[in-house]
Amino acid sequence: MNYRFRLIVLVIPLLAILSACTVIRPRSLSKDIICPPPPTQDCFPKRFAGPILDTSSIGKERFMRIRPVEGLNTPVIDEWNISFLSDSTSWNTASAGGSQILRALRFMNESTISEISTLDMEEGGSFGFVSGSSKKAIAARLPAGAYPGDAQIIEAELSQNTVQVVSTLNVSTLLNWESQPTLSSDGRILFFVSDLKQQTQGTDIYVSVNIAGDWTEPMNCGPIINSRCDELSPFITKQGTKILFSSSGHANLGGYDLFSSMFDPKAIIDAVQARDSLALAKAFDPPLNIGAPINTVYDELFPTTPSSREDTLLYYSSNQMAPDQDYAFDMYVYRPVYQKDTISQTPIVKWQISSPTLKRADKLDPKSLIIVEGKVIDEEKKKPVQNAEVTTTLYPENEIIDQQMTDTSGRFKVKVTTNRQVRISAESDELFEGSTINTFSLSDSNAVISDPLQLPKTISLRINFPTDQFNDPYPFVLDTNGNETTTQWKDAITKVALNLQKFQGTIETLAIIGHTDEVGTNAYNMRLGQRRADFIIQQLVKLGVPATMLKAESRGEESLLNKRVSESTDTFNKRCRRVELFKIIR
Image 1 (cartoon, helix red, strand yellow):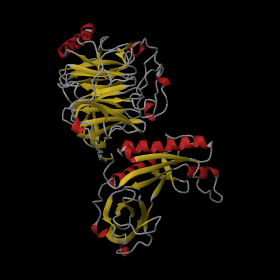
Image 2: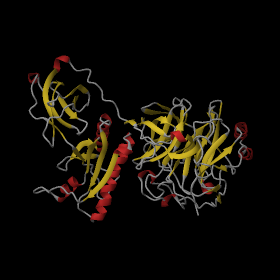
Image 3: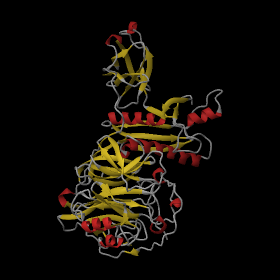
Image 4: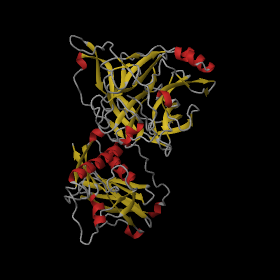
């Protein structure tokens, strides 16, 4: 048996027993692996038969309880860890849409997230597992376009909206996988995971120390901490003398378990400076299994805590609720509760997407501006839409000229510029965006636009997928005639996410329905349609839309469009391959 596997970059596609990275089940995008099969490991973990943690509540006013973290237990992404930084900020690393993302968190209480916002990466790529402080964070990163196994340890600066990479630490080596860093509170000791010695030991925990501002060459922490199986996700606790980590070796219950080990910081620094591997190994106490029911026969990973005692507050990721399902990893918390606090409440999570702010068209000549009038109607009901937001922008620069709301009769007055193309768009809480592009002259001042803006209840994202594909669309979306437009599919999805964010207070659910052409069997197309709808959900979640707000289903080839006269089969099939979205209002 072999517990060997590899991360795509920052995130682990976790199975209890694997013989090579090429045998990982290809269910979710974030779990696809591109790497050569590793040599077989001599991995024979012992069976843990230690005591069980007491989580019973009978006859107790105060007791320990394990529950999923509300807001970090969604069914369409993997939530991997919570990073508690020294400046009291909290961050979550998650997998969505084929890459790893970092999200800023706000807690309502120890078991509930009240606000989530996804960060932009200035240089692209995957990013996560931060440690240290927001101004000087140590993190793991896979640059955009890099070899999939070449994850690096970097220094970065975080804000509530963006991640700015400062530098790559010299502990990173070319074409080796280094990830999951954890930094001691004094900034002197850095643990991380690497496959540097993959020929014999799988993934191990390594250490580097900071001497006069420079990081030393990493050293393997040795056989007390590292077994012949895989070790992952180290975390230095607040007091700085204990490391928590996950391992498929040592004495465990099955899969990956959480362990703790006391260590001597001074002994580690001295041993690394002296390059004394024997002294380094002896700096650690033998690891202790944290025990059941925190550990299960499934996989537990990424232990963290903002407390000085992990036995009273511990966060970790596990797939115990649905080990055979896609995106099964959720965050859990082990914490004390009181009987009077056990009445459940449903939290409302505020969220915002990661998207650039539209610029104002500040350099327009005031003499070139005129006011025009128009009307917004419901495309289906043909009735006026009250309180729709109307925006005029320069086209194609996308710089805002004016924004106004419609009155009770659906009418609006907005400023536009003359002798340039202007896009007039409108959207509302119950309906999606409608728009038109016009060019005005000074003589059009106070003119009424003849055709009303029509807002649809349902929109079709005609993201053009190659035949049989569901996760690698062509760059540009199609129009209603099946022709390629100049709009990229990522921009189309971002526009949907912005609409959901703007009206999140009134939208209960966004229904996403996947459709296919009639090529293939009905059963196959039902699965393909579901995968395409799931792909849209993954992209929306990656932008920051809560997964609980999204619902996907497939109609396969059951709702084909009407074929037009003289329309080619190729064009007809392109129009049929679509994903429809509609809102369910509270």
